[in-house]
Image (tube, rainbow, N blue to C red; front, top):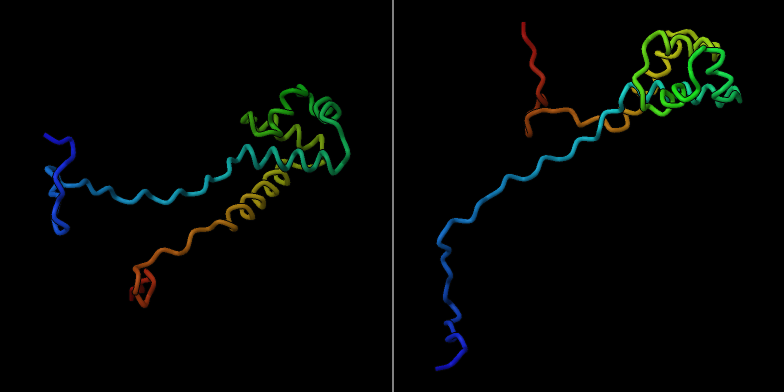
Length: 132
């Protein structure tokens, strides 16, 4: 008796007992939307650094704790509108200015990675429909 398997003919086929499972392709990973608290924090930090002011200086003027302002600037805390207004006013901004700058940053960041418009492949109208 030999330990070697018998030689198979070159045209032999192996038929699996179970059909192979076909997995659908993984969906493409969508880029993460920026969080509002990150955008607002970036605006506060950018403005504070542009004015060459310290966290302590701005926190004292806004009457909020320095560690809390640091957390807000880093996007770690979701600050209330009162805290955001106080921090903005300490930097010489209105709450509307702060929010407008954060909105501008949101538009800038999301415009870079906007998905291609959806439509039916091969459609001459690219998904548009007009009704009369």
